[in-house]
Image (cartoon, rainbow, N blue to C red; front, side, top):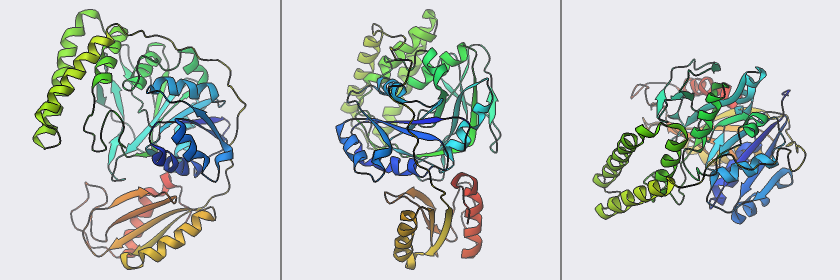
Length: 410
């Protein structure tokens, strides 16, 4: 049990299936007390209402393409002292909130961020980074086993990833929340810069992990190929006006535009875009940048007091177990895992084949952490290509690898 109350805010639009999966994952969090605030379009809210724990969710309708407005609306409904954010195409590890919010025991910590694993469930998509004065993210070395509290020097900030971050509610409200001018991109980067400028500390906590899949949306395909760059151009223009000296705007924009164009050309060479697509996307980038020069920006109008009282999500005494199965017994093992989840357990199912296949981890819609791969194959992509291990030793190694994040008890 934490001394702090925590609100988890999830923003979703046009991804009801992803939202439902995310909510199943959040429902397995081993933390108390926390509440869940869902800000979503009608399809997302309908998907949430079909879940067995729907009566314990705060559901807020919002159907505009502006993530900052949606997050601010979530803030007005969040009654926790700490507000955590996770994307609808992500799933948290069961101990996520415990590790993410622990640094808030220090009064000087206003923001917290964790690590993000990518689509294969093993490799990291995001770890620790800091931001320079131009909003560019740079690698940062931190202790992987504990939280690191950072006071960035003037002109810099500590980056928190939008799908795995938390803030003291009162600090975020005093800053004016998320700037609605950032409708899709740089929204948390802008907050990070303002937090640093105000002198607040940020804690980075590697063990606070979420898994992020990059689901498709109106701006990008599920393979991360862009569909439209208008809001990226507009957001950079707004960011420049807020944070970068005017004399640096043009060279900064030229560098950004060149980087985006190179990225598009890589997709074109790989056959994911046509030449006409590249020309259209660059034109949209330029059009967005031009509009961003005149887009209104600033503090959001947010009600200081929550719309409704804190609504604690019911948290039972969940055990977290890892079961191992051969690929031949996988169907039977999965059925047993479904039963265990229905009984209140958190289940990791390790399915092994006698191959050297790389491992992949996913969180299924049934609420099971399913990891598949070869008995002799890589788990971390830095592992040896082939290693001889018995099933028992492989399972023991995986148990140890995820023990803290998964909260394994057996």
